[in-house]
Image (cartoon, rainbow, N blue to C red; front, side, top):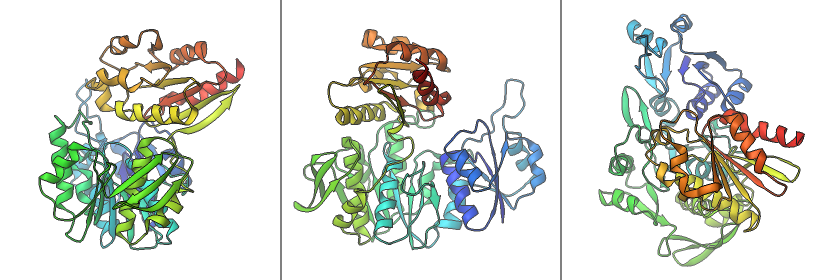
Length: 457
């Protein structure tokens, strides 16, 4: 069939496009403000990208339109629709569906789905689990909200019965306000962690816990729920009812426990040493992600020993503490962290890696819908405690970033645009520094601009 995807450059919809293309469908799509890595992946696959959401795309006459959750019925200040193509689809009575629904019906049907849910670490843990299954010879299909370096693509159909998917709690589409993950019907589910996020669609933490419980309700009795034993919110989710096998990780009394530093640790299952993980990753968050992947893989017969062996060659994901270059002894990193907790764990992971004396310059933009609303601005100083200096891009914010970071004193600076932030960083950077850029968007290619500017200094 010919499918036309609205919002094709989001990580999820871009992965769906790759799967549809691999399955033999003709795929086209549209979006605005395209940026890597998804744009590069789609062009490499030969998928035609159209800029904007113009109603003239109706001439394509696809068999079905797949609607991303970026699309809405919103109106511009002049009263015109923000997404004219969607209005034309509705007027014409043309067939349309959501991305998660299309995926459920055309890719996941009849497969053993392993879903990875959680506020943080979904992309990394999904990538880890996919690599563990690949290493075990299971040829899994997968859809990841990023590009795992071991595979070089964000999605593939795979050759076996297993499919690993990043299970997002964000809503499905403007016409389906359920979380995406309720469409996936997993047999193995990881609940990695859970705290308040997505303030644009959820009123409070309890509302998100309710959605997580909807996911738990879909897991069969022979399935497994792998749960972070450190999270009170997940304890509350399971207390609402659970009908499947449960395995915990993380706490000292969990089924799967790690002993040792995050870069080299022993895995203990039910008190017995079962594996040793030695790898290039750092950070306690990645240690917990590894335990979750090991516990999920064990449900389908992959031993912890084999899983740990796979993780020793795990290369992480693009934009996850990715070194973009080193100039004059100054290293520039790109990371996706945007929630205060993610910023804190990312900075902590780098601190553990480089030691207590090297300087970390944290460069970030509060770009997610939650951060733009300002509901978590009070946590920013806490999230940046282990950074020596912090630089905030405040463009597009309705709240005062200077006031939010005031408690950090001279350690924090705010710039209204990317060039201003770059100048602030250049005035402070010196050989031996680590420049950690954090955003869930393109951040104006700040990494490339910094490397170029440092090379000219």
